[in-house]
Image (cartoon, rainbow, N blue to C red; front, side, top):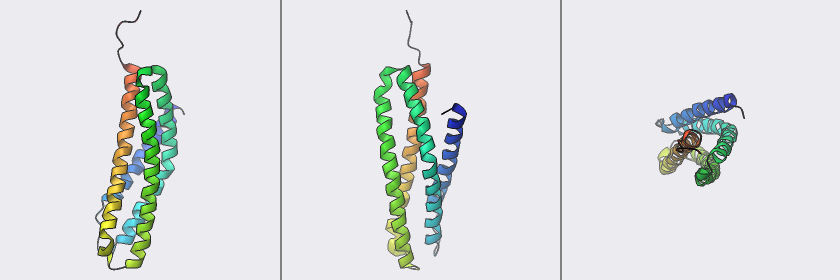
Length: 155
């Protein structure tokens, strides 16, 4: 993946992550739970579309880190494991969001009945986004360290 495409992929993901975060953190007005869920689902779907290109870019970073500094392989392995967990957590989040939508359609105007479940899905989504941002930052940090670290005098 070229740097320009990788950069665009990162920008696209950030944009969609920001929109999902906004949707998740928007207070739910009385009678608007279904609309809130739909907005969160739409933005979660947009994030899902951006994850594959983002992770492709990360893999090129992982390769560069491994090639540039063998000592950082343990960090690469941790990031690969984190990536796999993030993908699974994103699917779990979307599944829980779907279940919440089904329940919301049944409770109709008595939205308080599923308030705890809505809050759980909101927490799950915001934690997922935080961990995704953490992975982005870690990958960038370790890539910079691998490529630009001063290794002292070279013979």
